[in-house]
Length: 155
Image (cartoon, rainbow, N blue to C red; front, side, top):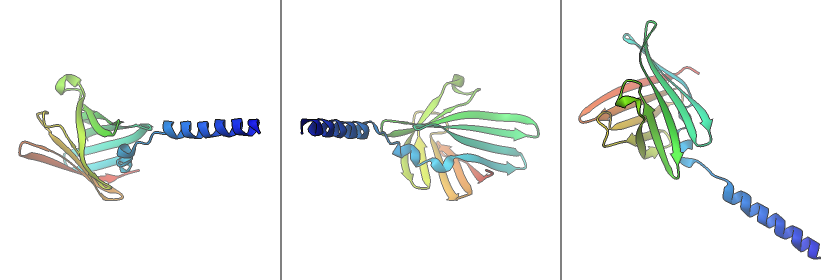
């Protein structure tokens, strides 16, 4: 009888330990629709964004603006959940001394995410809106200026 009690105690302990260690990243999961490659083709060139899963708390993004065979703009983005907050962390090689700039998620729905950094010069706000399963609209804004980017999913 003591053995049964001992085994049951160990099983209960293991069950509770597993539950406490299971971490969910609910804020990051809101952005799962970012995953894949998105493009915006214009007469000026092609703007591309590509998003992949790095691990359970981090998505990685790369953006490029290409005209003919020249890359005119590039940036890397980390979408990272820390504690209960989601951060859009962007690094542009020729801006901000190539240091990352963080934007915190301030508003969200299942198809809309708003990241803000009121202390940054421009942009102060980055918005993503899932228009349809294969299209999204991104916008950067601040100080009365805004620029929008419609994207189509290519894979």
